[in-house]
Image 1: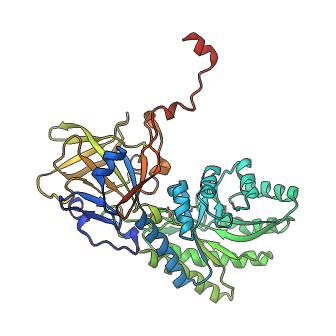
Image 2: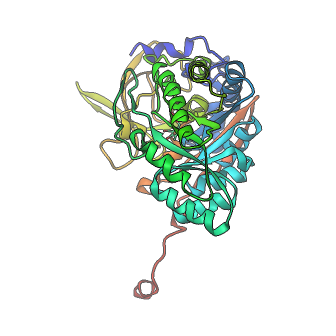
Length: 457
Ligand SMILES: Cc1ncc(COP(=O)(O)O)c(C=O)c1O
């Protein structure tokens, strides 16, 4: 409970936004109200309504720059950070990522299209997925986008396409390195139970298979070991394992020039979270790859990493308006907001924790109450906070939930036919819309009533 009183008073680290709960431009105005990038949250809700997603441009850019700067320091001249667009995909995000010189990874034609529309250069995009459609693979090949082969089915289809077009295709493969991560501990297992990638024990076989194709050229390896990871050891181990796999591939004549170590760095959602900085994470993985290559007398490959959450999560906040209260004496007081599991499915899906405060008086530590914050969906489990301490509040007050930039908008739904919120970008006291709010009418767009039902009515 204490955390909800104190997190706003902590010193903000602008260089590694993932270490803060709040966006780096968070401040309080003379009336004690919350501002992000100098913009009044109350003013934004008046103009754009609620619920409202807000993204802070400076926090986003600082995160991108932290990855670039650290890679330049620990792995000079041979790296490419790429943003995992599943965390938050939009034409705006693609454009910002591209303007910072990062690449982008995508897992569907929709994400690929969004990246291209946002101006990410084709050669900086990689295409993932454990069940790519024929159409998606063809789209990637047609647009010269690097495909990360996840399984034999991908391989067969790429071989077929390369034979039809009669030209070489460079590919990367994804494998499971046998490192299983949990947030606060990790274990190494012989084989990793995952739907993604080739088992490490199958790689010799695979390398032989690729060697026998006419046009497939294996140029890179990919592994991603998990998300919201606070420990550094798993990525240290990953670097060593990947270099060993380069050596194995060499035996089959493959010259691996790229290592993509995935994403996974955690962020601070609550006071209990203490993730490493972006600099520490990059230092760990870079040093591990450099040392292992030196040990085995290998040239350094291009090092790619795929952060998602640690680029965009802390930049994002969600604002809700409080509606109904229900007090159950001796048990709890439910406070319902105008959004919930459709704009943020993480609490109901993963029991994820967040930090939140009232917009009008975030620092008020007097007259505080415990609340359960419920969403508006017709689902008992639609609860954003099981128990949170806030200053006394009433219907119509605004609540700000922090750390919602990643895996909220991108995982949102229209459950109960609730339209998705707008997203606003804030920077230097200015606010711009980057995704429009849906309307109930928008949700009817794809419904079709067969003629005989129209006649019937
Ligand atoms: C293949 C791949 N790369 C990158 C990421 C990004 O991970 P994170 O958001 O934890 O940085 C994910 C997310 O799970 C992933 O599946």
